[in-house]
Length: 381
Image (cartoon, helix red, strand yellow):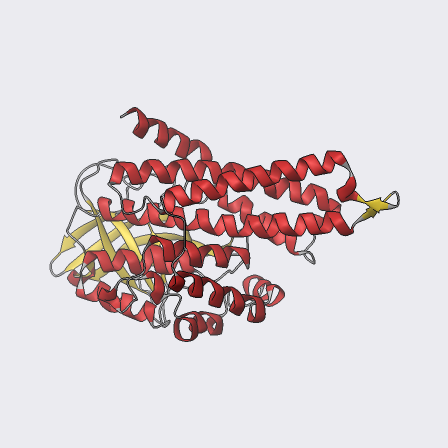
């Protein structure tokens, strides 16, 4: 595997890093997340129009620059390093990249809006009791004339309160756990929530907006079905693996920042007349953090550079990476807080915000245990 970035990828990384360092204020982003709109639309427009980082990760079929997994890794790692709260993975990976693969005209049009920075999407695929399994779909869609009627519920759909469009999975045939029979539908939110949809909004521990959704005889037109009826699972699993690899890269960026800040703090913090970084026990702790970080980086490369492989190979690499990074995120986050002392959990210090994000990453797109089980099953096969 070649880990060397091309000159274009280096420019993408350097331009985004410079922009975030100069114009992405952590205090302003937390304010927007906690008591504001939940995101910063002007930052998102800059991503699309000024930097082109959204299009850099998307195919030409929807107006992107035909970027692939490497571009996705470069962008998401930089976003994680700056603790960006704007919904890049939900909208670009689980949204635009998935929509583009359907080839559906309406989906392509929304993908073009995403490239232009004028639309946000959320994927409503996970249900209570599903264990994160995408084939576990109890929500049902039934044909009624020229429409579809959707009934069911989805749990903790991140970005749903902000989204202009929902991508909803619903079963059009088969039993709850069947692989076949899962379809995808577009639900336009527009300026008002449509009749038949209830959105119970929540804010997660890492300051992101999410919602539990309930569908009660929600009527959508026939054109809302995107992709082949009953055959959406393959597309969903591909997008889910891409999003998992993207959050792995985001976590690596966050862990780099946390580790660097912790080392710098240990150099400056004085105890008994000397810096705490001179104490051998704490040096050993930081070495262990560094080892976990390097293992996470290796797993990140493995997952990202296998995203275009066959489904089984892709899934194996992604699960190995997610299990590795989940462990590293917990270890690095918890040790960073401990080395900072009580102030590590305060709102005033950046480390506390990064710790909460890393705690959420540990379970996002499946826990370490879930991915270890998936890896064992695939490796055994």
